[in-house]
Image (cartoon, rainbow, N blue to C red; front, side, top):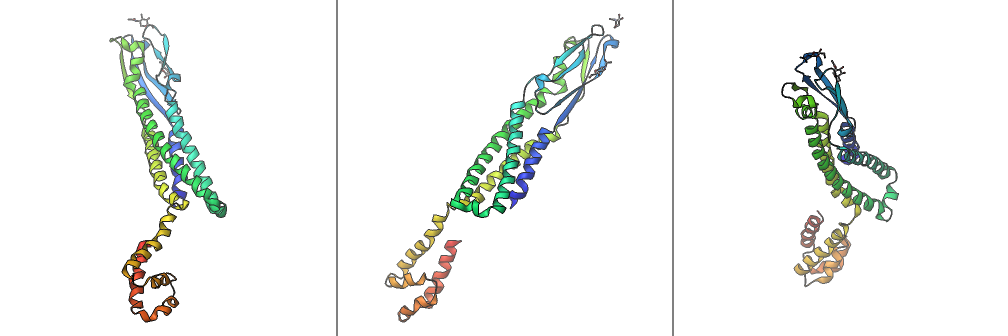
Length: 266
Ligand SMILES: *[C@@H]1O[C@H](CO)[C@@H](O)[C@H](O)[C@H]1NC(C)=O
Ligand SMILES: *[C@@H]1O[C@H](CO)[C@@H](O)[C@H](O)[C@H]1NC(C)=O
C-alpha cells in the first residue's frame, strides 16, 4: 500500500527537482581601466547540464572588447539517466497500481503478474541505486564547474593580476540536493518493496506447505506408538478422534498439537 502512494510521488519529486532545475551564478571583472569593467556578469544554466554549451560575454579589459567564454564539462548523461529512471519508475508504478486494482485476476493468472512485478522491482531498485549514485557524482562535478571561483579562472582578463575578478553569488543547490535525496529514497522504497512483491510470487509457499509435514513428524516422534492417531488429527475435526477415543489423552494431544502447528505457521 505504501508503494501505491509513495512510488509515483517520490518519482515525481526526483524528476521534477532535477529536470526542472535552473541555476544562476554571477561574477565580476574589475579591470585596471575601470571603464572596461563589468561587475555583474550573470551566467544561467539548467538541466541537462551540458555546461560546455553554456557561454557568456566577459570583458577582456583591453578597450571595450568582450570575449565569449564557455563553461566546462558535460554532465548530461548522469542527469538524463536519473530523470529517465524517475519517469519510467513513475509510469511503471502507475501501471502496476492500475493492473493490481482493476485486473487482479489477470495479474494472478499463471503467476505471471507477480513474477514480472518481482523482476521489474529488483531491476528498478538496482537502477535507482546506480542512477542516484551516478547523479550524486555528476552533481558534485556540476558544483565544481559552476563555482564562481572556478568560472573566474576561465576568463582571460582574470589571468592578469592587475584585474580583479570575483564572485558575486553562486547557484542555489537545494533543489538538486533534494533530487539526490529522493533518488536514494526511491532506492530504499523499491528495495523494501522487493520483499512484498516476493511474497506475491508464492515462491515461499513450498515452505508453508512443509509445515504440516514437519509438525506431523514431530508429533509422530511424540506419539510413535500411535501412528494412525496422528494422521487423524490433521483432519482438524473432533470426529477424527472418535475411532481412537479409547486410546486415552486425546484432549491433551489436541492442546499440545494445536499451538505447535500454529506457531509453525507463524
Ligand atoms: C555585463 O554583462 C552582462 C551579461 O552578463 C551584460 O548584460 C551587461 O550589459 C554587461 N555590462 C556592461 C557594462 O558591459
Ligand atoms: C581606458 O579606456 C578608455 C576607453 O576604453 C581609453 O580611452 C583610455 O585610454 C583607457 N585608459 C587606460 C589607462 O588604458
